[in-house]
Image 1 (spheres, one colour):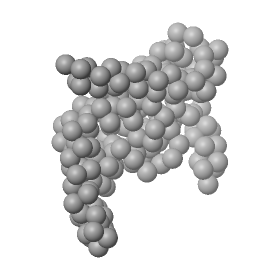
Image 2: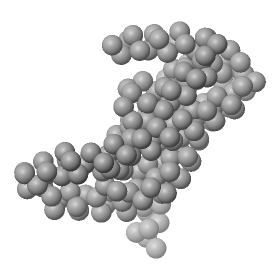
Image 3: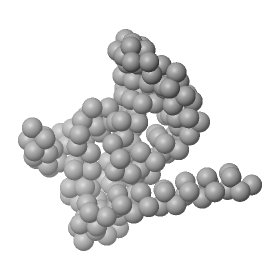
Length: 193
């Protein structure tokens, strides 16, 4: 099924309705779909480099809206399904402690997941489940998803096809290392000062 979805996305990248498909894929990837929109974004930008910024903005808007949908899934379904299970197994208080820690670092967690290859959908649902402040969630999502999609679009715009392999194989790793170092620096400053 995943291979069929991937093949469909690659085929849609050249279709006249590609922007609508890119929006839809970016939206559902943020809450339930396993394949990132980059699969469509990369060939679309390479085919029409002048529209790189439009495609990056489209991915960003759709991804953040999809993230809000994922947040809603976590927020509304937790009370009906998750909380009773936690109480049944005696983990209700431990989850409250987890929620407190999650929400303390929530903006960074959302930002990290939004830029790196970590599944963003996991964080969107977890943010709703822990009732992370919705404004914090949205701002961190806009910053991270925008950064991610605009970096990909910029690299493709400036370097074209030769940068494609780098993006597909190494960009996620480089962004992850950068964010780990950035986050580590903030943690070190917090405990040293």
